[in-house]
Length: 252
Image 1: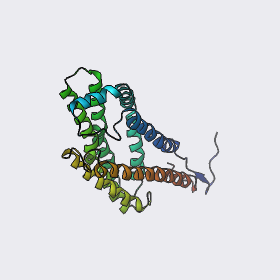
Image 2: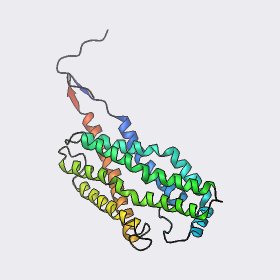
Image 3: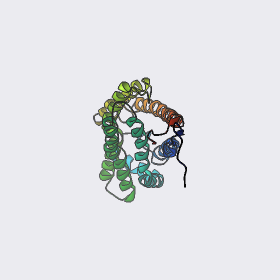
Image 4: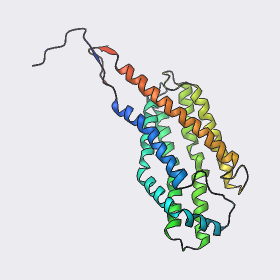
């Protein structure tokens, strides 16, 4: 029979190994994702928008195998993005601003994933499935896929906006305030990306210096900072949970 705990005894709350596991999974997932879209699927950097249908057919013919491998693997692994977004949501729920911002963030990221990732995969896989298609149809799949992938970045604007507000108003200091200002730049580049539906070439086209490369630089800085901050937040939480607390207090 277990003896009763003495009055005034203390215990330590258990840590959260699941949080640390997903924290390490976060950079691994984005590394795999980067290899797929940059090396295999070849949508980042994207091929040119100002080419003929014959050139688009040639693009798919030259890269059919790697596109099929890359996007087939991505279709299997894309759920990993939900896991990484769930980690961000978890830490946002720890903020003092309440859970609404966290739910808005994950919902906005889920909505953005449909045109931002799934549609380009389906378009490119469909284009490589039947290379004998009418070149005009292949050209349509090329345009639709790349406009969706690059031009629908605005779908993520709401997610970055609620994150910015949450970080600025949070009193628990889960993320530092400077990260909110980095996230604002994400919103700016998302809005700029909408211009690629109009321009076939130049800085505002889907491969342009402003519409694409500015967004790539900002996103790389933002993502790198987020990876570091998520690790720091998880480490701080683990240290807090290891602090002794008096018996009778809730164990989480």
